[in-house]
Length: 316
Image 1 (cartoon, rainbow, N blue to C red):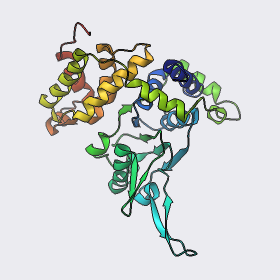
Image 2 (image 1 turned 180 degrees about the vertical axis):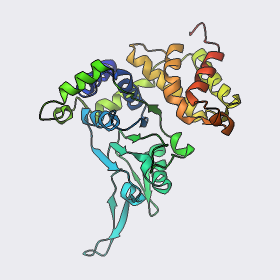
Image 3 (image 1 turned 60 degrees about the horizontal axis):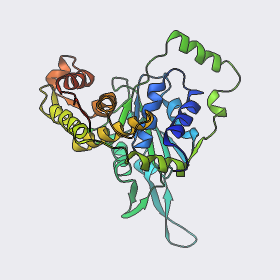
Image 4 (image 1 turned 90 degrees about the vertical axis):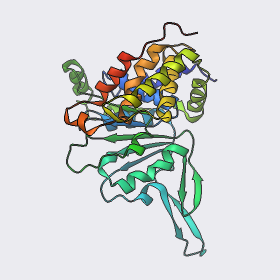
């Protein structure tokens, strides 16, 4: 690699800190998803910095950037693109949609119709888009940063399970402390928002080198068994209608490898798996109607699973 992956990650972290105050955990999760070639769902109430976090990460990378504000009237062709007849040549031409960018910000994704939401399924899973029978490869690296407000807000459409499973992890930012909010107010008391002056600190080649490094992080048979056992336990939990898929288990292991990179290690520890379990797995769980009626949350179920699965004593 042209640079140490850990130093590159911290360069990005420190750059985003210039805009996002006191939310290092949320920033690190977004960077872990980037390392793992994953997509991020940022979910929280309005006004806590969901779009700002996504835009700050995008501006920190010297990559092409596309943004679409989802509304009920957005059509799938606005995202994927469409073919139309060139009146001069008489030939059909492909007009790329907003998805033809390396970093795509899908703002308030749950405010558009399920038909439009589903247009991102192929894009997020296979890194390509098919329009009128022709497949177009997306530029690399490719990452979707989607934001959404909780589904109990008026005018929103819940994302289907298949769509949720394609998000590598989910981030919740939360409200700042009084001290953090004072810092935010100080930074925004000038004439220009801090994000306006943000510069890129990593290029596309560096990002892809970082991504290739994650696969070289060693995961022992004990660590892989720990991940598999956690996934199996969710499929048997009485409060769950749908547990973790193999895709989710793979995401958990990959995220643990990236977490090890951030810690400066070249091997996975059980702590890496436990740290990543909630952000990587909770949004993939489907509760039974009875559990929902009792007010049980996916986070509670996941914490229960982690408490029942023995932690490997030795990782070799």
